[in-house]
Image 1 (spheres, rainbow, N blue to C red):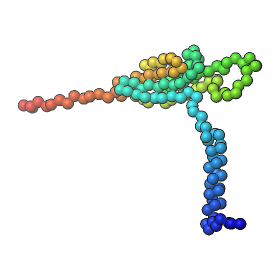
Image 2 (image 1 turned 120 degrees about the vertical axis):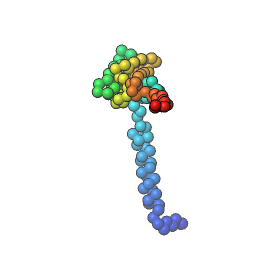
Image 3 (image 1 turned 60 degrees about the vertical axis):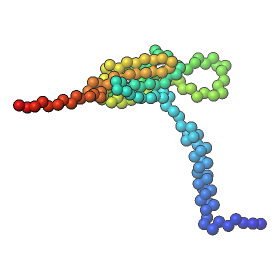
Image 4 (image 1 turned 30 degrees about the horizontal axis):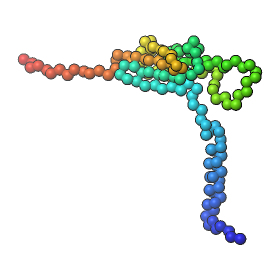
Length: 147
């Protein structure tokens, strides 16, 4: 019988590392990180800062938007379908109930002039920038002769 020579004990160290890596990838909470229930994107141009939030399956009447102390709060409720007692689910990844997202607004937006729209399960809120926050050009004048 032949024996593999391991002069530095590397085998036992690597086995421990191998077990740890395997444990990490078998842990479902690590391998499948949940995404926010209402994923959002924020972008801006010279005039506005815009926020879009995905709310698939939510009726417009079940969406509430409010601003208080420069904090935007979005609440939405997705109602679960009626259960007739005969339905057997084989996969259930959709969430039901209330979802709340909050966003701190920058001071450079005029939240009192915000406009919100809802179409195809996407809430869009547009915040105009305050006049003092917009980029502007300053004219450079030449000085005339002081006589």
